Image (cartoon, rainbow, N blue to C red):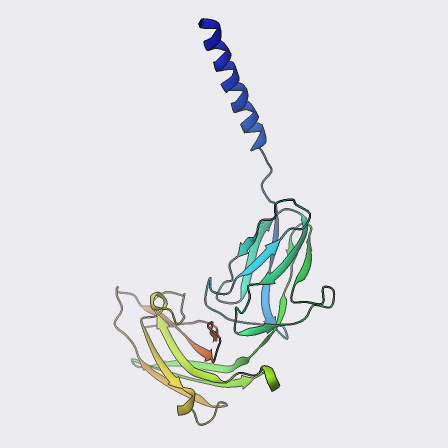
Length: 235
């Protein structure tokens, strides 16, 4: 009986050693980072709404690596040195992917070897040019030129232009990311080259002496908006 107990304990100990050895992998030490851009200019989106997928070829079991996009269009991922396939999820983002000459598709092959920078060139439906937001007393006044980039059969109309404000630096159209908003439908915009919006400053949930704002453009048939950079205002 005693010998059987000793055998079981030795077996459990061996399994523990094997498990520790099996799990003792090095952590990924390389960083892949960059921006989604149009002609070198970052595309501003909502945080964690437009995400990248990375796939590492050559493994029997392929696991997708999801990479969160920041609201300024930047991204960063800790990876092992390897060759990866990079793509956006289907029908995601206020832009169209550009056909990659190497893969002849919207998939990009990237070789990560140490810290690697990769800006991803896309074709946005529209760009927000010369965004101006000023706080005059308790009123935000905003203006912008909404420039159409994609023409022809792939073109889409603007649905609305909006001004959003929030008490944190994360600002977009979702309920948790704006305290107040002003929406202007495309039918009410006479000139996309000179769009103007005004919004009364909302009451803050907590006392603070700063607030954030930015402009967003909703495109027909596209769930995600394109935004201007976030601006901070002292109050």
